[in-house]
Amino acid sequence: MKFPSLPSTPKTPGAKRRGTRTIAAVGAAAVVSALALTGCGSGAGSSSGGSSKEITVWHYFSDPNQVKVMTDYADTFQKNNPGTKVNNVYVPYDQLDSKLIASAGAKSGPDVVVYNGADASNLALANTLAPLDDKWGTFADKSQFPESVVHKVNGKTYGVQGYVNLLGLWYNKDILTSLGVQPPKTLSELEDAMGKAVAAGKQGMTLSGLPQSQGEWQAFPWLSSAGFSYGSPDAGALEKGLGMAQDWVKKGYVSKEAVTWDQTVPFQKFAAGNVAFAENGNWQMGTAKSTAKFSYGVVPLPVGSGKVYLGGEAEGIGAFSKNPDLAWKYLQQTYFDKAGQLTAMKDAGSIPSRKDSAADPAVTGNDLLKPFADSIAKNGATYPDDAVPAKNVANVQLAVGQAWSAALGGQSSPSDAAQALNSKLSSLLQK
Image (cartoon, rainbow, N blue to C red; front, side, top):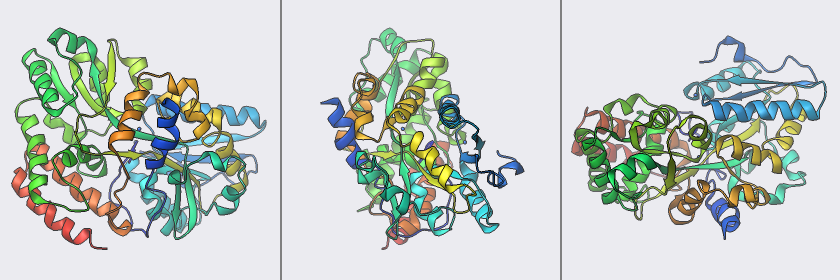
């Protein structure tokens, strides 16, 4: 996810997806080559009322810097198209899919949808998104986008990602300097540093332990570092990974409150200055710059041969948009535009999906983005995993997120959580 901004609560099962193998190619074709990542009221229920000059954009961003991207895009579009109006509507992350499905049932809804790319199949099969093939097929800059960011369901295009996101390890330079330790490159170095931080009266690391797909998104790097994979699930590897997480809580490295935090709250706590590390994404660059009163940096998550999901939001047109042509024009001039993608990078730290935008000096010369790009090259993984049947993506994310949360919160032993999860996965991963 979301993700991110990323992962979400259970969704309607979907068909085989294509575009959600997001950014394996982006890492190589875009970022790596250039360097050589949430209530809405009843008023959100309908699209623009038919005005040929007005569109409504649904999104789930609550972070101020991500909201700024939406505001800047609206301002840019309205300036370039006098007389137009863009209505940005916030819908909580865990409500977006259900509200889209409900609005589609009433033949209404937004003109533009900014959604978790992993949910493309669910949303398309629920008839909430309009196919983009005619528009995308004639888009002049289509060749700038790797196929990996184009989301297709049953051969039809339903969304394209304007940027990509992934997790890294943020660190408080001031705290690490006071402890006499270097940014960790291995798991043992991270745990040693967290132990020293706690002994000095600081906090170890913040992360999300929500019992849903946001939790799964943040759990996957650590579980995979313990040897877990969806292609060959193993209860022993799960127990090792979940046991490590529970041990962090027992030692005071990670707060048990993490089970209630989405990905925004942990970074806010890190930015407050008393935490050594944060498992969080490139999209937090803006928050770090505007909030942190200390020196900070980023290194790749120290997960060895483990994997880090590559995700981000996709953008599409609502199935019942009153102004699909204006909605498409908006996407071309914002999310899919070269300068527009750099706006998202500058506002929120999002890595551009366009090859030319990713090659811009604003990206290649950014010390905070480089560790994320390095992680893409070494540890980047398809999101969601190819081994997970598209129809069961939401259920798999929920099951893993619940096990992760139960381990962090102490509601279950690592062994029991691992055995129960492995049993669920044995059926959910059947093709």
